[in-house]
Image (cartoon, rainbow, N blue to C red; front, side, top):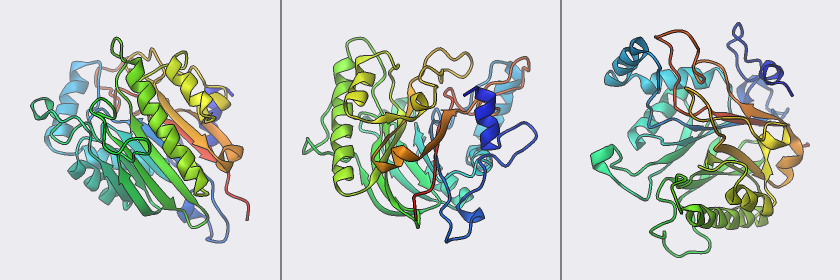
Length: 305
């Protein structure tokens, strides 16, 4: 599917601000709505700009603590059912973002803490949703008793939500960056996530995994996901090699939404979100993007009655 066609199907155009077509609140309770999820590394709530004017504007936003308000305003336009956030800044930031959206949240601090570089809570992740969160677990381990020193140094978490029509397991993950000789670490992280996903399936729930996986689709890490029988939602809709990072000049795809279980049969569309302020407009020194990553999204048809 052509990118503009996909965005048009979502109702996301330069003249229509409604974003994703419909939401749970737009639909009578006896008619299940579609389920829309976005995975987004928000760069520690740090937007980016090419020009000095944009950088000055962003400094003002950050200094005046306006970023939760700005993110909430843009997210609300998309009529989402869930967001997995990577580099989620802090628990205070996530709580304020959820408050402005009127949503629930689960917050997962990172395993490696570095106060000197702005990460006193580690590099956290979070799950936000307008639906009820009935379970949540920070760093949910299946094959290890305690968090290994080299695995999940960034945030990793699980939440079970009740949409009113089905219960789903959502997993957010931020894998180790692709530094030299670190493939084995990401493979270890993926192995643990796959074990969790299979455990959740055994409990009768479909599973959605969103995150910054820090690997391209042409790697052993990607093969491990595929060997685990997960559906790469973007690849399933013809966007396996879409570029998601960095927004200033996208060069690689490292952001994913994977699915497991019956929900895979209900995939309607999936892509990267390439409109401002998620993408970087060209030719304006004051333009900016909300992160150095593009978000990716997937939409699933409602469950059968």
